[in-house]
Amino acid sequence: MMQELEKYLRRDRFPHMWCPGCGNGIVLGCLLRAIKKLGLEQDKTIIVGGIGCSSRAVGYLDFNTLHTTHGRALAFATGIKLARPELNVIVVTGDGDATAIGGNHFIHAARRNIDLTVVLFNNNIYGMTGGQYSPLTPANKKATTAPHGTIEPVFDVAELARAAGATFVGRSTTYHTNLLTSLIAGGIENKGFSLVEAITACPTNFGRRNKMKGGAEMLLWQRDNAVHVQKTKQMSPGELEGKIVIGLLHKKETPEYTFVYDQIIARAREESGPGTLTPLKGGESRGRTE
Image (cartoon, rainbow, N blue to C red; front, top):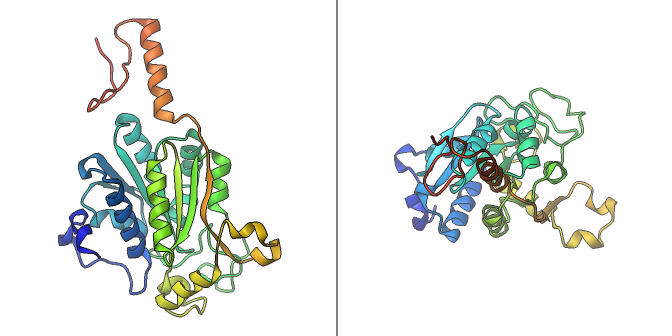
């Protein structure tokens, strides 16, 4: 890790628990570079994690952090953002945490377009809890719960987010670190729900079972199978089959949830008079005034 990023880390929590060759440290480095690039204040930045390899990242970060329950990171983050909308709220989550047990929260956080940035570590498997397949495990890949290969179709989580209402959707790999850093920074700057899917390697539970060798080989696989979204316009569906489309996949302007929520509070106060909810102002929490 570059020395300039050390101020963002709780060094007393090291060494980390990730396996050799795991790509999660690369994603973490890209997140910190994005934060540094934007100049976010540590005391005004909240990073929320759920359960899983990716979510252990919050323990190493010197911000206001929450290590929450399985699948509920977005529910906790929503509460934080509603109470303190002036804060930067970032969610780190995994493919199982976000799209299986947390799938309902994911859909509705995107639908509301609440100003959260979700960095989804997609290693295609439940890495920490035993190697089970997740909704993002590609078809025909092996896992402890699919020893002969999965038969379920895989989610395209980027399309799921876009269809649900997200206003910023991007995807990169741990090989393409500059792009991943840029997308995370763009997601944080976006005033609305942002998803950045980070394709990362799990050599221990995914790579080993699927004969993809080690972490270095899995990085090269990402390099050889990724296609930038601009190039897809000249490619046929057959040429795109099995490829990872990377880049900024979707962006649009839609009113952000907490902004609209404050407008409703202001209107309610104007219509009802004293004793009703007031709009949040810097440093205050929402509540009743008497």
